[in-house]
Image (tube, rainbow, N blue to C red; front, side):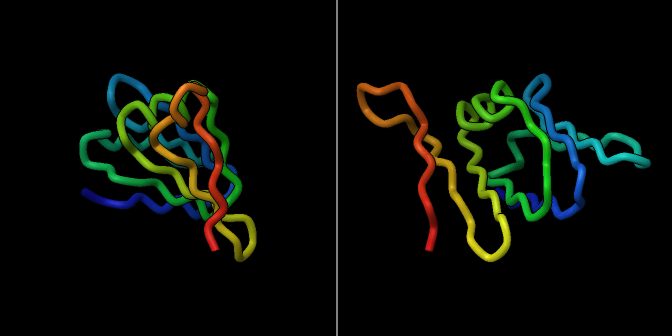
Length: 91
């Protein structure tokens, strides 16, 4: 399994047909099969929808979003009985 680092400001990611589609202005879209990913690390301002975020969690792909020096990890599994995926601060 691999980690995908996104470090280009203005990137847009979407989940389509079991794959991650990455669009960066001025470049051709890139597609990464979801089965190859273990986690995604967002190091720059990136757009994604709640549908994409939920699909990544469903596929077992972790997401870590950095803002400055601190990172926030989004859990893959919902909290029992809540149905929500909480945000966990890393430190």
